[in-house]
Length: 513
Image (cartoon, rainbow, N blue to C red; front, side, top):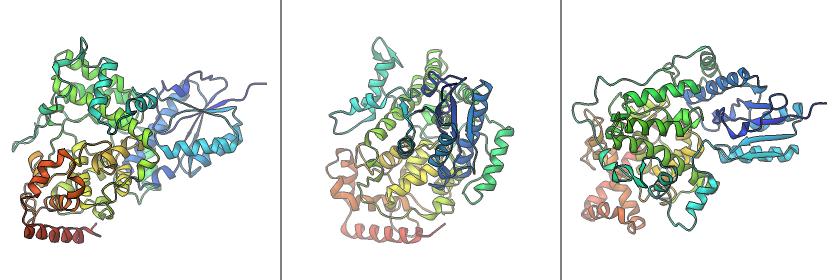
């Protein structure tokens, strides 16, 4: 009589054929388990592009496993509403000897799966996810005894540990960080019209079926699928990487923070979704970028800036997430309680920068990091939106959003909800920053230089109002000293005018969209 199978659980963001979950897999006995569940698309009101990326990548992965001759139990959309319900059904039918998985990308999903395993009396083995270059235990050791966690110090440790961009024990080029070379704007001429756009992936039959499913079952969800062209297989992800390295990496660093109307991609890689689904190994990405520099095809500043986002920031936020959850999700250090303005779901606002960034987000499920941090995130921070609402919006609208990476980026970095655990200061700025880094202000009805009056930019008004609200709390932060010094120059009359204007901004935004 054959032994009972092990059930290997593969979640939608674990599509890695080299996963530790498959170590020791016996094709003659063991079974891979996957499930599409509506709850993952509705617990936050996910845009259609995000739903489609996960579902079509999962279905392509299922076919790749079946081509290997492996048995796959795959619950398609509609069979079950939740992971717990789907797993109960499979355990009852298959009576596995054990469940095996790598750590989930979301604390709540991991908790629920562990609970149902106990309920069903089936052992659950949770393995370290070796997709990442730093284990959760290693990050916890790094964090031990530190009052503040700074990415820069962690990043240097990761460089030394891996040898990436290192020469004879020292950082290549003599510096750890080339940020000073990577803050360029396009100027009046705008981005190079001759640059090569990102490689597109025309939907195949599986993807077209998913698009039809999403349009029918999630018809009321925001966004559109008319432009859907994301890489959804490991092979496509490698093609996307090669395309970025060849055509955009060299300019990425200089213009990584720049923005331009109706230009969603610019010199960015579009690789985060593929990496977060585990279709693309970060080691492969890092090695390709480093090779481009060593081969003289991209400057060191561009390569270092790109690698820092992966080897540094990506690993750092995951470490923060698993170190601090579940309490982290509810932190609200600045006591922000405003509701997220409705136009975040429609893009219907007369602020040019927000309209462009929001419309792009809803159309493609994508915005680059400065659009997220210094446009959509900045406005929410200055407006005083409850950071949990901001977190849920970011988790819903971006195709690369998995909670382990999205939550710390949003609540900690963007909204300063953790009070400085991740970021050394709130990333607050007036409309002048957006004017400097983009052409969004050209033709906008608002003047970024004005905090009060009929043409005052809401960003600038709310920037000064934010400083006024939190002046006492921020006084001990040395990195805020210059901004607070400028605040101190405002007369009592000007302060009152700004506060009155800020109230009008909030009244005008409430319920819009």
